[in-house]
Image 1 (cartoon, one colour):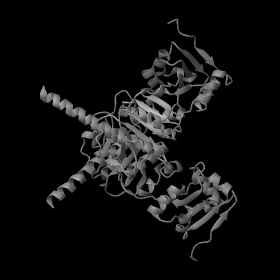
Image 2 (image 1 turned 60 degrees about the horizontal axis):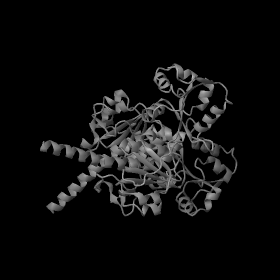
Image 3 (image 1 turned 45 degrees about the vertical axis):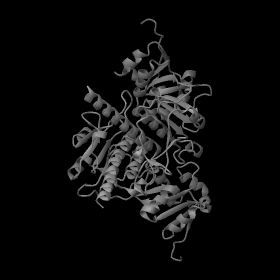
Image 4 (image 1 turned 90 degrees about the vertical axis):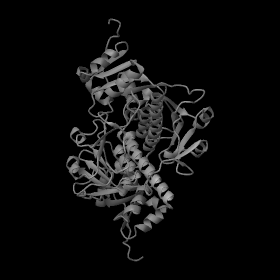
Length: 277
Length: 277
């Protein structure tokens, strides 16, 4: 118990730590600052679950008395714990009416693997933070474990993307600034892209083995040079005369069609084993 | 040709029409103003296609010279056409770098049908404008034609929802402020809700006949009293240990699983006819 670091209190808006956190929360980190700020009970719990205690926990004074803060406070006992005066916590918060709790952590920066053989999500210049967060969340829910983001995608660890990712970030390896065209050389599995032209219907495609799913920019879709490298061109059959699907909705349809086929395979295999046994 | 109304020019920010449009564009219409403003080539074209010429077309001076504006300008010849001085058009625009073109139209306010027998989308307190717009877009792409929105949903015709809907609004009948609990009395088809508890797996469900799809608030899901009225409780089988799907992603998965089953039915029917013939 006595090994924990003393709790600090910050009451001045000129405190340099506070000013740095404020920049992180507003999505404008300093040039050499690789840290990110996670806000709210849900994201902080998700980080604890996937990554363990953070280097720094920041809590607004009035959040200290909340029931659910106790376990988080205890779990962070070996790191820095900071209590912020309420008015500073309110300014730091990017969420309306949320009780103020924050983790300040380093964003993981993994190196891409030498060969890519696991199903993964590739994104080409997906600019909207809400779309990007939703795509990561959908990928994690569908069982993918890697996401590759090209130059021109929204910043994965920005507050808005973190918020719409809802913790999916911590269940994935996220490779930012990825040169997708170059990475196609490392692929041991097919590259699947959705497109309207010369494409097979999603539901007619055998998706039981893993593939890499490539989705593109909200307005322009996947860049031509990347599309040329795709092994599969896939089309989601939608009603004629209406706008195509939003990129995050299209990805949800594709990833869960694959999951449906894979689950059916598992059910078949189980039935076959039962027959044999 | 000579029957068209003379083109008006507005150069003052104090012009009462301009001030009213500005309020619409900023999502704060006057109390008795049922008009909405559509911005951009895509939304304006989609309105023309589905609804015909608007009562009022507003174009920024510098947009007048663009190639694609010609056909829109011509199509609106029987209504009011207004040219805005560039600086006023820039302030009116809610889109970065977009050339300024706007329709000012009345939002349709349809009355709910006496009986509900067509597949439709029901939303219970979906608050995020981006989610709501994406849900409408997905519903239209999946072939639904009606959307019922409870009190507490984002305003369907607000600029943000229109933008993420990408024209889906004009392909749907949208019933806002709908009392969903009361409307269950009018249902001639099953009401399907997604939930984690006591639910059937989506992929094991026969969805070939139409149903009503009910999705709920981002944080709280579908309200209990509504969930109790659902005929089907459906669960999307996702990977354990990660956050559930975003509501718009969940809807995309469900609506397109239904579409997959319905398309398979059509393919079977066609094959059967061929065999007979």
